[in-house]
Image (tube, rainbow, N blue to C red; front, side, top):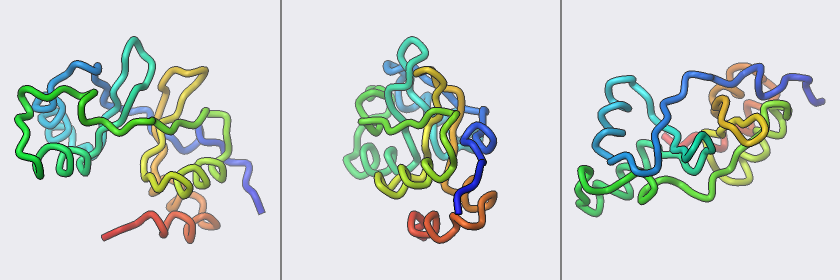
Length: 138
């Protein structure tokens, strides 16, 4: 059974945004200060990538790279999978499963307007909990 819940009904609009050329040290400081595990990277308001704490660990720390010289576009995840705010949460869950992602940027006509996570779906749409559990890795 499908619900009538739309992505825009569950998405968060409190998103940290940075331009492609922002250095990683600035991004890490903002993530730490604001207690966020992801930030969005944009160019002229159009989302170009996402940086998660995992990206920083895998692409920066394990390689011993200097965060003061690396910029966002060098470490963000791309291609960026997005969903329109008018889509259903079932479609969001399917995209997350297909791409094995936990954060799904939400757009409105190409512009970033929010973020929906696997936890947003798991806690608000109990019928989709089994699908979202597959994304959880302790």
